[in-house]
Length: 86
Image 1 (tube, rainbow, N blue to C red):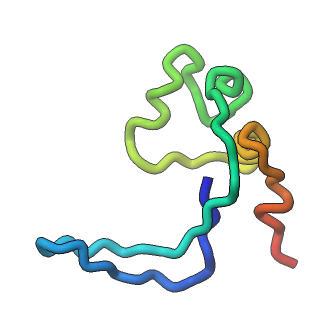
Image 2 (cartoon, rainbow, N blue to C red):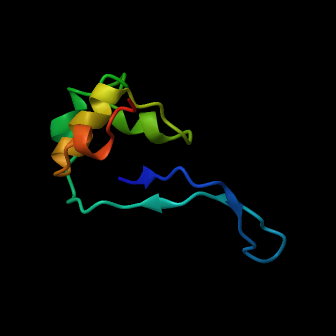
């Protein structure tokens, strides 16, 4: 789990003409959480039998409730780590 900062994008030179854009993130202390106990409770995973297919095509939209459930399984408090702006 990572929290994206509000910092601007920065373009990095990785050599060989590869110039990806980067954004600062912080990685809170977490612990690994097994996925199988979560699968049945996550709404973005359509096939509970073939749950891995949800992650095959790059970015995945994870609803807030699901993200909070995953964060809790990793030992984090979603409301504290991601406070709503006033």
